[in-house]
Length: 239
Ligand code: HEC
Ligand code: HEC
Image 1 (cartoon, rainbow, N blue to C red):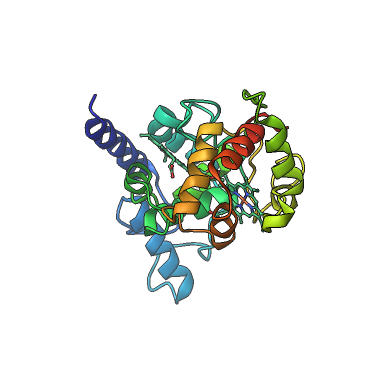
Image 2 (image 1 turned 90 degrees about the horizontal axis):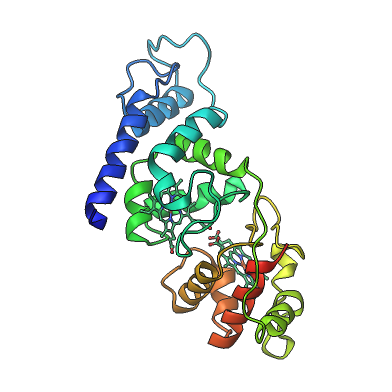
C-alpha cells in the first residue's frame, strides 16, 4: 500500500472505533470521539440543560479496554501490538508515562509538534481517546534494549551521566533519571528507546523542527553530531 492509502485506511479504522464508543453520559453527542468530548466538556462546565445524565459528567478515567481497541485498530501498524520494539523510526511507547504520551498527542493535533503521519492520526482523537490509548501503552512494561556502538558508548555514558561541564550541557540523568526511567509526569522515559529515533529527536530539537520543549532545544542546541550519536546509542542500552 502507498503511505497515503495506508494512512487513510488507518483513519477509517479509527473512525470506526470512535463511532463504536458509546459515551454514556453525554446524551445526544455526535457519534464521533471529539463530538463526545466536547459534549462532555460542555456538560461539566454548565448546567446540563436537559441532558439525560443520571450523574454529573466527570472527566472520565482512562478506559484501558477502549485504549486497547484504538491501539489495535490504529496504532499497531507502526507501534506494534503493545507499543514495543518495531521499526526504528517509530518510537517505543511501551512503559512511557501516560502524561507525556498525552502531551505529545495533543501537540501533534495542535501543531506544536510537527509530523505529517502523527498529526493526521492525532487530529482524529479526542482528549479522552488520547488518555485511553496512553493508559494502555503505559500499562505495558518496557523491555530492555542494547547499545551497538562500542567506540562511542563511553562518550555516550559520560554525556548521559555527567553532561559536558565546559559547554554547560547538563547530565541527561538529572532529568531523565539515572536508569532512564524518567520522572513522571514531567520527564519522559528514555531507557531502551530506539537509537535512531532518539538521534532524530535530538537533531530535530537542535534544528528547531521539534519545537515543543524549550529545555530540550537548549540542550540539544549545544551538542555536536558525535555526542548526539553517542548518547542516543547509550540510551538504547540503558536499563
Ligand atoms: C503510519 C505509522 C504510525 C501510526 C499508524 C501511528 N504512529 Fe505514532 N508515531 C509514528 C512516527 C513515525 C512517530 C515519530 C514522529 C516524530 O519523529 O516526531 C510517532 C510518534 C508517536 C508518539 C510520540 C512518542 C514520543 O516518544 O515522543 C506518540 C505518543 C504516538 N506516536 C502515538 C501513536 C498512537 C496513540 C497511535 C494510534 C492512535 C499512533 N501513534 C499511530 C508513526 C505512527
Ligand atoms: C532540564 C531537564 C532535562 C535535561 C537535563 C534533559 N532533558 Fe531530555 N527532556 C526533558 C523534557 C521536559 C522532555 C519532554 C519534552 C516534551 O514534552 O516534548 C525531554 C524529552 C527528551 C527526548 C524526547 C523523548 C521522546 O520520546 O521523544 C529526548 C530524546 C531527550 N529528552 C534526550 C535527552 C538527552 C540525551 C539529554 C542529555 C544530553 C537530556 N534529554 C537532558 C528534559 C530534560
